[in-house]
Image (tube, rainbow, N blue to C red; front, side, top):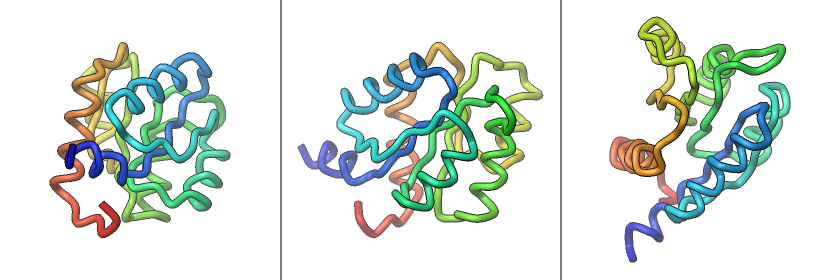
Length: 134
């Protein structure tokens, strides 16, 4: 039960231009007792949501119109250095993974997303950080 309480304290924003993908990720997170505080369909709207909701973690797709998830990750690390980023993508070639990690992503998860892998990644972030509200 304590783990679920900690998970519920972790504030997460999900960013994906696909409504379907976003809804699947959110369902997975809620099934694992994580706290989804916001969602966005673009990098521009994501930055507004991040500023407003102050999440601990942003989960973002790479391929999005106008601004990619890689560019969003760089911007988050520049403007919100206390926020962790998990990049998800169906593009899982090594250079894409390295580009995401190089941009400052805490983790990379290939689509289709495995719910347990997503939960494990978030649990790992929780153990690596000293987030006061958790």
